[in-house]
Length: 359
Image: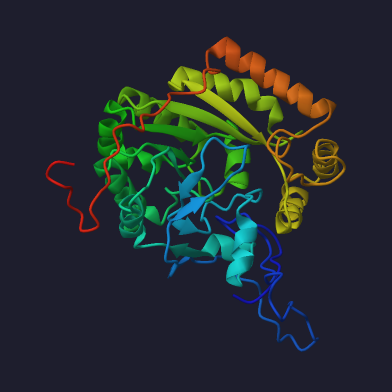
């Protein structure tokens, strides 16, 4: 897609720009030469689903800030279009823009179930909770017709492998049959990311994700199916959605959530420029204040990648947010951390899809 800046928000998209990847040898921009030859920016951009040729599907990490060391991401890029998404810079490694390309050129790992089966079948593999949706949403719109995430869950269920799911989508309800069976074996927990209860803010900030109230109904559906569900209030954006923390946790608790967590906004690499453009377009009256507060909690910068502080921030304002969360979570009974999933029931699958008779 050519580099351009739109005149304003595109319907269903969070980014305004499509600047080239920082690794690209060439940079381009739209220029009016006075001959009326410049193409006008598009008003709508369709989503293109591309094949991801990666030969592995499990990503490993050693970060002390997150409670898992492995994850599966069926998709690269995400149609939800959240302007704050920390995964946006990964599109630069694919020679695509972290802006509109990230939302409209989504790479799908169609062979993810087969690749996962191969990993779990390796001799010496030791099970531990697998995160599904740690980078981009496994239930974004493309999943409705591709079914890759469902295929991944089927492999995990066969192998009795524990999994933790994070999503903003009500599409997770499609897989209640698999999830309920896994929950009966203490193999799954699902966390709905709910960043606001304000429909207008939600529509602007997460243009293709489920509406906030729809996510609350999904929490209830999960709970009624016997699946332990939690709420993730992330990201916390000062002077934009932070005042909603207590109400989001309270309504999530009423909907059936049994645990809660939060993550403070951070703006790595290209995300800073993309989020700033979005903020200045939608909330020009408070943009400077929001960015100032972010920097106060990030040591004077817009991002802090250090372990121990990147999720929570530092300084007086960050301390207040942390204290508010602790009080609210304790009062609502959401401070227990969720279930400890069972790793002992794991049985390695055969690569041909069959289990050993006495496995």
